[in-house]
Image 1: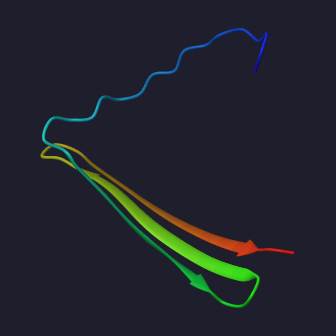
Image 2: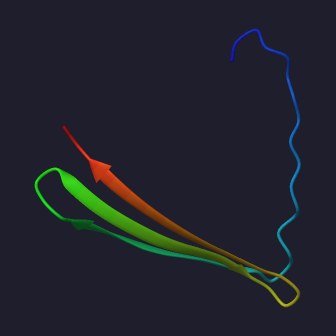
Length: 60
C-alpha cells in the first residue's frame, strides 16, 4: 500500500524442536466445481496448534 503509514506485527516464536505438518486434498466434483480440505499442525513438547480448512471453488 504505497504511501501508507508503516506498521509492525508480532507473533509467538516457533518453539525449539517443533514439527510443522500439513496435508490437504482437492476433489473435482464436476467440470467447474472443486471441494478442498486441509489440516495444519505445529507440534512441540510444550505447545500444540491445529488448524482445519475447507474450501469450495465454483468457476464460471
